[in-house]
Length: 68
Image (cartoon, rainbow, N blue to C red; front, top):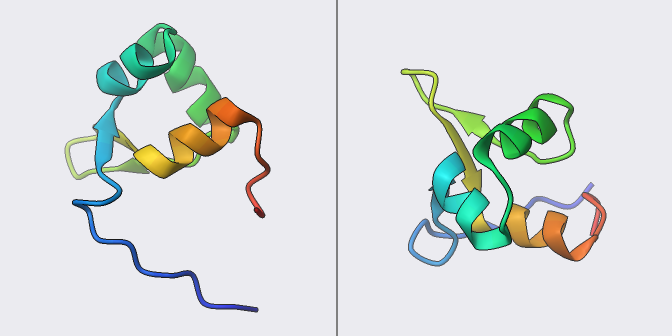
């Protein structure tokens, strides 16, 4: 299996649910539900705040698969 390429945060920032929802025009609860369902890959910080990489949001919004 090929190692994933490291992408610095400045080129692929972590977005809040609010930022992500504004970018694709959906509500934060919808984004949160899709994260919980595994449709969008996200990370949760120590405080429980969900963050989504911008590239992951683009992947999801354009319909690309997780393996691409």
